[in-house]
Length: 345
Length: 164
Ligand SMILES: [Fe+2]
Image (cartoon, rainbow over all chains, first blue to last red):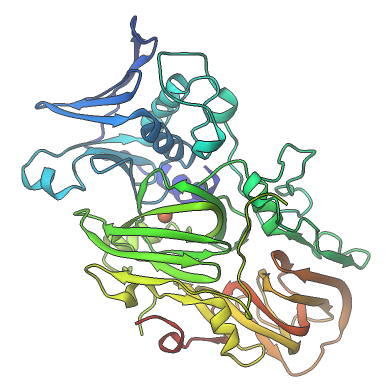
């Protein structure tokens, strides 16, 4: 995934850790439901008409509503396990080690951990990634798009009923320098398949005036970012729009709720560009509530590196997510050199 | 226009949210509002509203004509309110060292070739290309964000702008 290309490429060159598990298996089709089962190490995944059911050794089991599970799984797959911890819910999730990934149950839930009921295994990303990709492909039915807002797609329920390959195979958008530059990510238009979203019908679609002198056409460039975001067909999916070194502007459009509780391994910043987003902030390790944010247009906030966050938006909102993609940061965290909050005063 | 109204902020009309603490320090969220920052800043003061190691996002009150700036790396300007004109120039000789981080303010308009002009309105993002010099202009008070690296023109006044 492009957002993490440099970190993942650097990690891929390293030898695997001693404790990694490389066993992953796609199981047979269940006669009753029509869905396949999946095995990653000692974790087993099964879906039925309403739920994903996950089990692990010593009697561990977890049931997740399939709509929430598929929305979370879709992000984890598309983001290549993203930065840090992706909590599907209060029990199950992944931690990205950039080249390797931990799949866990109860590890970031203090009740499970205190009771010694947590379980986790570490996999090469190239083992767990493709398995998760097969899972989202098999478990997503025709007409259901796990990236879409719930009001804008079909339902995930029921026995196996076709597929939605177009939705689950979406190519992630990652500009190399800036959207709209020659050879870079193109602007969105009706003609290239990105109509304006129903909740952004009032957003001005005019493009800026750009006057380049001969020879400077490739560098004198601008585009309508708000128009671009108003045409996004996905929710809660940060996509790179402009790049200064490792500084990535990853704006996204948000409707309903963030399908994961994101516990980043570095600071991440939010600038609300339109409307209002409410954030629930909980401790990254224990899951205990720490704060609630109401963010309106123009509001800026830092998400510290020791929390997890989940956002909610009723009216579809535009959010600028700002990441520092430096692959030095995980090492600095390990060495205790990276602060939880990137600004102190 | 449909039934939904998209709420963008402006310096004349913004509503600020905030942090409600359950068990934490509000300072950890470095919470500010770009329109409020621009409202309370001098024209073209480039105030950091977000920082992650060397990288920053600056908010500025765009009013009248800015100084000329030069920068060794790309920067991007996003208009949050109003209308801002960008003039770009390719200096005859490099004005800043290749490793210089952040924008550098120039005393005067440098010698060089005209690269072009952008007229940006709310929501428009423009490239300030590496190695160029640029000047911004706003007829009416406007607000911009600049994606860049902390440098000599970056103002850090967190205690003045953030919820504590
Ligand atoms: Fe996040």
